[in-house]
Image (cartoon, rainbow, N blue to C red):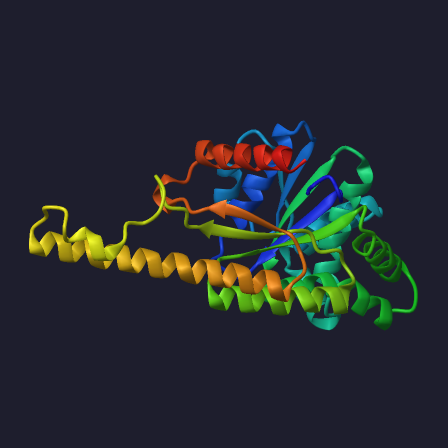
Length: 290
């Protein structure tokens, strides 16, 4: 999955576990012997704690602009401009500039040749389309100069399947699936970026087999009250599993992309060790599929 492109932008509706999935993908790629870098756009400390020894690089518009100015001979004023909040002024005057400097930094990392896989913990799905569309917008708005050159180079990277892809993350629920479908079509139509397999996060798999038949629970020598509680729990669990499977099937019918299912893990149990275990499962599944 990750060997198809150097840069993989992970995007999805807020709350679907995008950062966790980014960490799982990073650990699985590292397990496969790839040189992996994780790029943090939102500065989430939880991501660094989940990726273990996989290196991370935080990138913001201010950081990327400062680096750009330093590399172009304006190092003496770079920090002053950053501290003054100039990026906010510039981005207001020229929409898309803040996104293009961030994408430009990702392009530099990709061109360096130091990494086999660069995983970008991208923005939420709605902003992801705007973020990735920014370079094309600047191409149309700017006729020449360094900004146009940067936009041209970023568009070239995003539209080359060997260099970039987007992996969309969803939960097996109606609203996240609806938003993923809209985002997938928008990215294909407006950005022209390759879409990798969809990651369906928090898929509920019953431990030890099927959920018991609710109609049989009350016959197991339990008190009436205990039997009623367990019956209600089994009915809820079965209903939840049926809903998840229906949404997974609908997603497959609507978007012609492969799917990777990451099992449900309680938030309280989430740790670097658990992420590593999930990553090992992805590597094993990839080997089994051949």
